[in-house]
Image 1: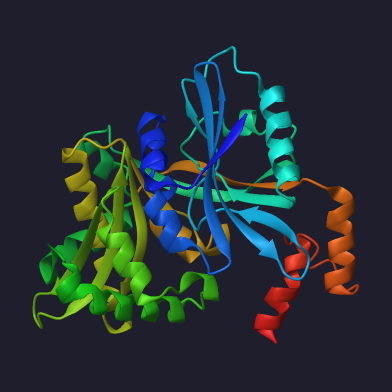
Image 2: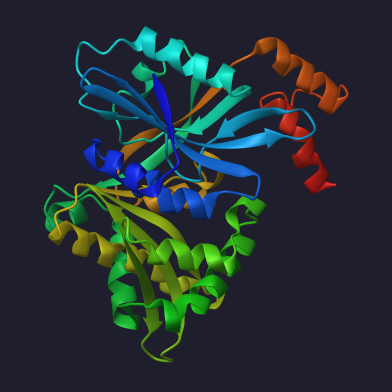
Length: 349
């Protein structure tokens, strides 16, 4: 049987029992991440002593009475509690299908988590899992010295110079949130990021004030001018530290302030006993300049995958036909769910 959890207390209770519950799974992050027509749920499948938790944002399909589901920005997919060799994946799949059909959910999309095992096994036979790219991990179980030994030579030079020109400090929301937003938007404009990478001020404030995980705002100050020239958000939960968002002043790009912020956080969270420091990947999971910047810190790459599941093939085809009026070509046919491409085309027109 599958139970749809929406209550914060119950959601937190289940997460506390799960293996490696990252901050992306929390109730508060789902609340701040949802759009106006999206409803966060934590699906809880229990069989014996084993449970599978699947967080989703369920949303209406306009003018149809039907729904679909997606995941939050970041890394999600199934979490497990006491998963053992007796887990019946086929039975789980049937129960999940029954839930989706009962609630008129036509398709499901979820980003998966690069650091969690068993996700593909749990989802076997339910749609398709595709690898989009790689993310960069710094192994915090290495010593601080051994971690640095794995940096590329150019990064070490940049960091040495940056430490002479800049100082990293811990920020606070009341005084520094506007600085972060200004720098973050500058950065997104510079790399021509899509609309999905921009958020409201309430979003930034909410994710930094949640009591379900530890967050930290790090700032880089230019020693000469005392100006804040870069800022980054880090989230910590369980064994994982996430490098979530960052921004920097284009005028101070050559001082490499973001590299220094990451390095200072690397040292701090190693001393705090965390295991993984996820720097993420490139924009759109590409191996671009952003990915190359991150990979200077480590060559411990993890695969970033997505899950696409069409629950009802016939209804899915009908939605594509009705909502797109044949406007499908080779450049758009991989978009999922395809019938929502109309909304994206509207935004771009």
